[in-house]
Image (tube, rainbow, N blue to C red; front, side, top):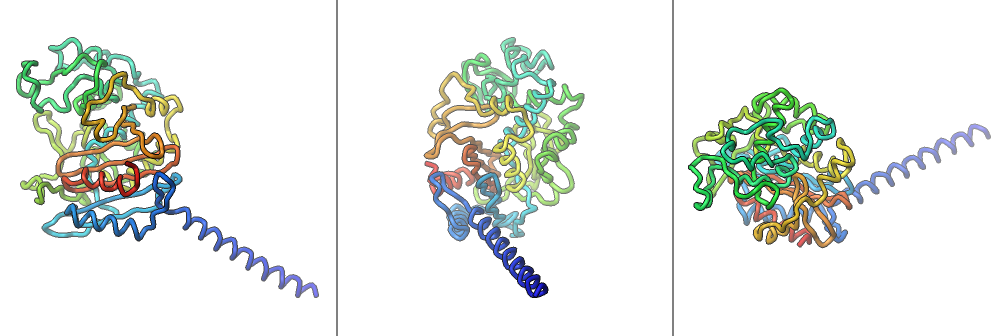
Amino acid sequence: MRNYIQYLYRKCRRSFMLICLVSFVFRNISEAQIATSTGEIISNASMDSFLQKQMDSLKLPGLSIAFINKGKIVYRRALGVTDIKTKKPIDEQSIFEAASLSKPVFTYWAMKLVDRGVLNLDTPLYKYLPYPDIAQDERYKLITARMVLSHQSGFPNWRFFPADSSLHVKPGALYLNFKPGTSFGYSGEGFLYLGKVVAHLLNRSLQNMEPVFEKDVAQLLHMPHSSYTANPYILEHKVKGHQDGHIDPTNGLNWPILPSLSIDSNTFNPAASLHTNALDYAAFIIALMKDKGLSSASFREMYRPQLNVPLPEDFRKAGYSTWGLGIAIAQSSSGTVYLHSGNNGNFQSAFMMDKARKSGYVFFTNCDHGNVFNEKLEAFLSLK
């Protein structure tokens, strides 16, 4: 009798464990789905169909994309080809230029230095490192890290862009469009200056600060294949950029260099040289969602509107309402979202994060149609 009872116990226990296991699996499958801002579930098949339609209609050579829901990656795809000549398939190891999606990641690193007391958001940067490139205009001494990270430095996006003729700027010279801290002007130059300051504070240079970034950020956030400078893995797995339906640049040089600023593949450019993919960058977004790695005060500063002036009309038309530190802020149908886009011409990218719902997405394309793709994606997700 005792043996029979033990047999029943073991049999029931196995059945109970099996039921629990099946229940756990089905529960996780049901949770691991893309959700719209209104909570509507989008099936993987529906998203697959949407992505293929967009790749065909927009002629996207390649796409790396990931969706996050409830703080976890629930969908990821690596689609298309690395270049239109060889037609080598893109895979999850493929590397893209992040373009301006470099800026939020660098901002995160800067805020870690703020937490350590290495950098102060409101100390004029010239006190750390004078900037000979703009020494002719004393107003630059007003620029702080806060102004750079919220695009209030007064610098142009890049000095080689045409300046207003009323400023009488010599070609190639750095200049200020307005008194720092009084207006908004999107600027890669500001991030470059802050990058030089950070390098100086770390007793490094833009040519050898990458290992510190990897230790402080990439390793912490599980971004093993993300780098601002070239390395063997990046060079082996990087896809080709495309513009106007052709591989660009045609000379085969596959790096966002800026010769006039002495920026090459060995230079850490905080504004535009991050190389990564959707899986790595999704890990960064999840860290933001979960307030990982920074003090609560630093996260509050990142998410807090920093501007006392309205954004320019073109930014407002794009749906942006204001700017935090390193990230744009917008209002969607579900509430406040944080976002950024990137455009190196032959590479375009974007991410969106709904922190309250712990949902969002990130994508990278190797062509000049990523911005249009993002508009289509936002509409599909009912964000606008």
